Image (cartoon, rainbow, N blue to C red; front, top):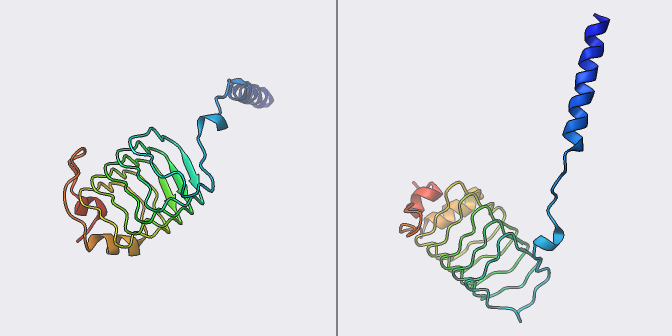
Length: 165
């Protein structure tokens, strides 16, 4: 029994050594572009590659993001009211505590995006794909009032992706 315990302890120690000793690739902070406290002087991000970009407390009222690649991007506490997000790919993105009122989200892809505690009042979501996105119940009810169309890239019906009844 004692031999079995020693062998198990040895193999556990060996396993932990190899698990910890492996080289780890951490995300470099330089690889993530941060746009903290961006002011209104930067307005045109159309067509840009903004994968994993971070916008924290950014004031982006009426900014143009049309056609931008925003996969994995983060908008935290940002003001995007009246912004043009037509045709953006915001898959796996996060918009938390952000104001997206009166934004143009037509034909946007928001697959698996986390959109909690954000405001979508009067946003145009025609053709937007919200598949597997996380939204507050109130947001879904509000968006379903005007949701229509089919996303031209994914072929997903907007109302179905929101779970509208």
